[in-house]
Image 1 (tube, one colour):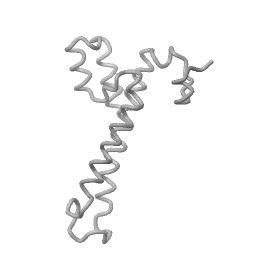
Image 2 (image 1 turned 120 degrees about the vertical axis):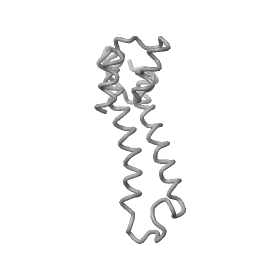
Image 3 (image 1 turned 180 degrees about the vertical axis):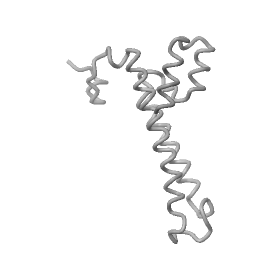
Length: 121
């Protein structure tokens, strides 16, 4: 029988996949992928609108441009943390993984794998 959290999220992966080392690497990979895709995508969308007649002032000069980028990155971080947070704590950044290893919150043996997954993501 599925638990309440599994029923609410629709997640039915076996625990060994979610909590194993390979599952952690996949979580970091997809967390970074989502962060960069949404974050860079919102900035690319702003630059793609340049010259469309939306504003004669240029990029970042019309009202709402800074809100578009701020909210886009905010949602990118929120989605990335939602994807990876329950499995790895959502490092989604090699510097965070390094800092966690220095503070002894992450075993050093996992750091190279996390870095590779994050860079590939």
